[in-house]
Length: 159
Image (cartoon, rainbow, N blue to C red; front, side):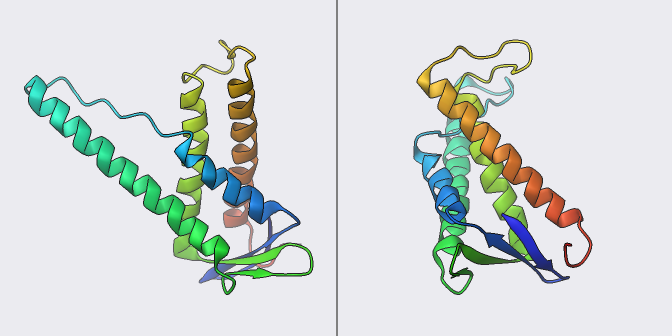
């Protein structure tokens, strides 16, 4: 994913070769890497806390699903993700970038949680096929997030 152009209103990226399909596949991991429910404080009755935790998890899951569906629809929209001879030209309004970053970071966090949320420097996860797949997902999303964040910092047209 390479930044081609940006101005105050939009960013235009080149998605080379299979990058669009890779992004769609990453978004497809959503159903296999659900985010874990968040815990609430211990204040309140156990029944109230459990109901609140369930409501929070349902709302969070619905929000994540909407983010992934929205980004997928942008990538599948031929007026926003224009097919080229090799790859695609993907245009985002400035306001859409936040959603893209949230979606990709959500995938990264879910892969990390699927491995048991290990401290990757001190307690590297054991070598299993699932953990190896999660590590690959984390590496791809790390690079993608770095590219996207760098594109926000670059001035004008990249060289």
